[in-house]
Image (cartoon, rainbow, N blue to C red; front, side, top):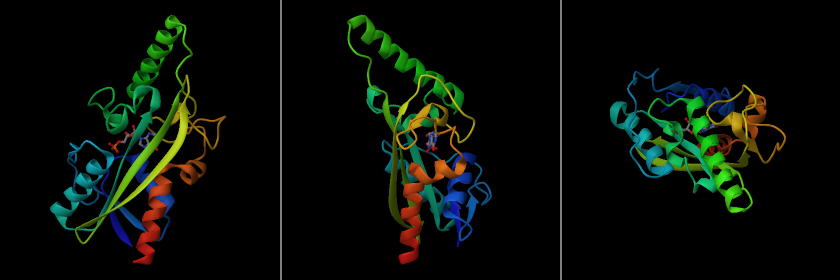
Amino acid sequence: MKIIFATGNKGKLREAREILGPEYEIISSADAGITEDIPETGSTFQENSLQKAEYIWNKIGMDCFSDDSGLEVDALGGAPGIYSARYAGEGHDFDKNIDKLLHELAVLDAKALIAGEPAPERTARFRTVVTLMINGEPHYFEGSCEGRISFERSGNGGFGYDPVFIPDAYPDQSMADLSEEVKNSISHRHEALVKMAAWLQEK
Ligand code: IMP
């Protein structure tokens, strides 16, 4: 099956191709001629995910899917959440986003120390909402991956916040330390895309 993935994120594209396997020919939005940034003005993962898939459908009328994802850190009240890609500004710089995240958590640790309280938990999760747009009808598939935020970066794999995300399934390694194969077997994206593939097979 040939299908467009509404993303310009090379990490997401690589992972979706590996998770869905050779049965699916996944074409990026750029390969389908859509090179502009697709607007993301919603206030939830689902709204943004729908917005991306609708944009492709309205522009070229082809079946597609999108992924709106992000990192939720409990001690930060769920931030960066839907702002994960632009946490440190519109430059969408993965490195600056990690710097800001570690800084925000260090500030909380310092405040707790001064108050004589225990340092806050560093529990977090990746979440995604995949929207599959078939004949103009949206279908949603969610995935999440629980873990915690480390104090420093480790590993070169993956993308985004992977160097500081320690998944519960592999508590001694960051997501960026894991092989692509292992990350793709436990990730939020894996959970959502496997649900999407099962739905497509049943349809
Ligand atoms: P968006 O879905 O394009 O708005 O951006 C998602 C952002 O969330 C990415 O730019 C990353 O910062 C972060 N993110 C989503 N999935 C992952 C992942 O699998 N690993 C690391 N960071 C991720």
